[in-house]
Structures are given as C-alpha cells and as structure tokens.
Length: 442
Ligand code: DOR
Image (cartoon, rainbow, N blue to C red; front, side, top):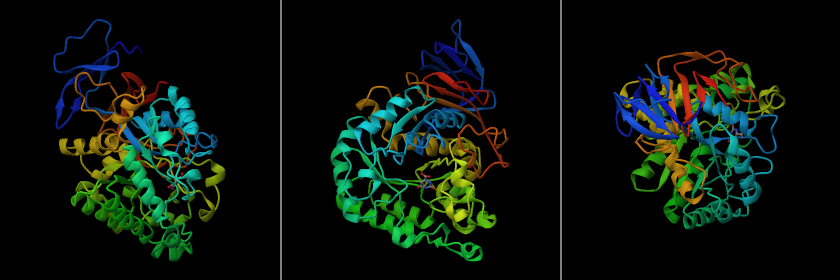
C-alpha cells in the first residue's frame, strides 16, 4: 500500500485531551487532516475503523531484542513484527545483548540492523562496561548517536557510588538513567517471590525488599545529584509509593510496571511452569491488586513490556534452572485494558498515556529525533502535521492467544490459551501500514 493517501474512516480519535469521533487523513506519511466530512483526495485508500479507537502508536520502554548474540530466541525483525502486531511503532532495546550495548560501535550496529524493522528501534546504552556494575561505559559516545536512556537492565547497578557517578555523568549529557532495582544480596538467588507459595513449592524466594531497598537508595541519589531517574519494571506497591511520593516532592523520577505484574500472581508457579519465572518475580494477589490500584490512581507513569524471549532450551527446563522472562509486546495493550478495567473516554486517554505518550517522553524520543536523523515523532497528539505513527484498536473484540499467533521466535508466553479483551486492527509506521486487519504486512 502506498504512503501517498490513506483515510482512517469511522473511528474514535484519542487526541491530546479528548476522545472524539473523527476521520484521519494521512498523506505522504503525515497527518493531513482530522475531522468529519473530509474531502477524500483521488487515489486515497480507505481503511474502515468503525468501532475502533485511533491513537498514537504505542512506545515500549523495555524490549529485549536478543540480537546481536541470541538470534535463536529473537531477532530485530521478529521482535519488531510482534511489536507492530501489538500496536507499537517504537521500542527501546535493552542493552543485555551479546555483545552488550556498552559502546558506540555496538549501538551503531544495532541501529543499522534496525533500519528495516517494522517499528522504530531506539537503543538503551549500558551504564557500565559489560553491564558488570564497575566502570562507567562511554556514555557520551553513545549519547552522540542519539542514545537518551542508559541502564544495565537485567542487572542492577548495585554499587551506590557507581550509580551516583552515572547519574552525575548522565545529568551533564542531558540523558536519563534507568535502574533495574534488585539488591543482589537480599535477592540471594531467589527464583520467585518469597512467601507462602515459595515455601510450599520448596523454591528459594526473594522478598519485595530486594526491590524497594534499591528504590529507596536511588531516590536518595536523585536527591543528591538532581539527575532524572526512571525505575524499571516495579513489582512491589511499596516501590511505586516511594517513587510517587518523591515525584510529589519535585524529584525528577518516573516508573513503569509490566503487564504481567498487573495480571498474574505467584500462585501461577504452582505447576513449576517455567513460563511464569520472571524477574522481578510475580507477587501475591494482594500486592497485584494494590499495584492495579496505583496504576488506576496515576502513580505509575508507564506500562512497559519487559519483552523477554527465551528459546526453548532455556525455558523447557526445571523452574529454578529456567531463564527468567516472558514475551510481552504482542499482548501488552489487551493486558493493560484488562488491568485498567474500563473503556470509557477517560480510560482510553489513560491507556494511550501509559503505553505511548508518557513512554515517548520518558525515553526522550523527540530529543533523540533532534540529535539523530531517522526517528520520527512518537507518542503524538494526532495533530495535523505530525508523522502518522498510529495504532487502531478495537476495544471490544476479544482474541485468544495461541502459539501459532505469536510472531516472536520464542513462544514463552504465559498467556497462551487465555482470552484478551481487545484486538489491534491496524498499525501505521510513518503512514505506512505494518499491520492491516490484525495481520502483519511487512
Ligand atoms: O525476567 C527478566 N528477564 N527480567 C529482566 O530484568 C531481564 C529479562 C531478560 O533479559 O531475559
């Protein structure tokens, strides 16, 4: 389908602050008109969006691409196709590849490989060399390539002095650090949440304190340095409350939660099914409910997938030997709708805030655009003149997750066999469909 003219006709548009019935005309990759009774230019392709919401393409702050180094688990091509099917037009790739993204050359390599992907790919650089938590990585070199987010995700920067230097350095470069909050001494090799279920199953557990202890320490470091910090995949309500209180005091902090921490609890581990092993671990029902309340109350800035594909040889093994992580990109939107629990206009705006507008702002994708040509506007308001990165979702079209429908190379989704409440109908990247009628088209 050519990028020349496309009309999204009949849907509700989730714009800057309102949801309203409107059509969207896209010409040459840019939103040319939003409204009713649009004059349709000759040669325009019409996409029926009746019953659907048209919103900004989703932006994932937390994707594990596995390329380079673990292409048997996932490639940039397969991950970006899964992302497009999930409604995403941009993803931020975590640096725990092999080799890790801890230098300008690896960042440049990933960006080059991603040029033909089905969504835009931004790269998060490592904070420390080899993600080993000791020497700072050459952040300035990576920032010069447009990297705006730095993290050792998969590992915590647990040395407080190293984290302090990273924050000071990042502040000078106008980039943001992101922390994987896990005190290794307190987590002590726990493979699930420490509680009733870990005792019953005889599996080593880790308490929420492994997470909250690092959150509390790092909030102190933000106070000390004045540098912004984003907290990745928070699973404990207490962690979120600490971040929200600090934000209330004016500290430049943000946090995300993952769909699985909002929809699954630690009782799922009862069958020792390795698909439910993830880090941070699934928490007890009472904590999941509190996390959902915090999401609804606006205490959580973004929902980010922590999409973590693992090939079967790493997952079809005993629970405590399996690699932690689960797929996320294709189903995050439906899971977030389930967690938010409504599809009223206010819920729809909250949804696109959590999955598109806030993540784009946290990853500073617009600043990345200015630093490096090639990226286009993400998390937009659907205003005339914006690049048309769009997601069209039917909020009332349940779909069943099946192995066959998973676009990732790995199949480690805990949701296979479950029904999700929504279907992503179309995704447009720079005005060109990557998904049409819930089918990937490139
Ligand atoms: O469960 C997880 N898997 N948590 C992480 O932080 C890393 C991720 C991975 O890379 O597999």
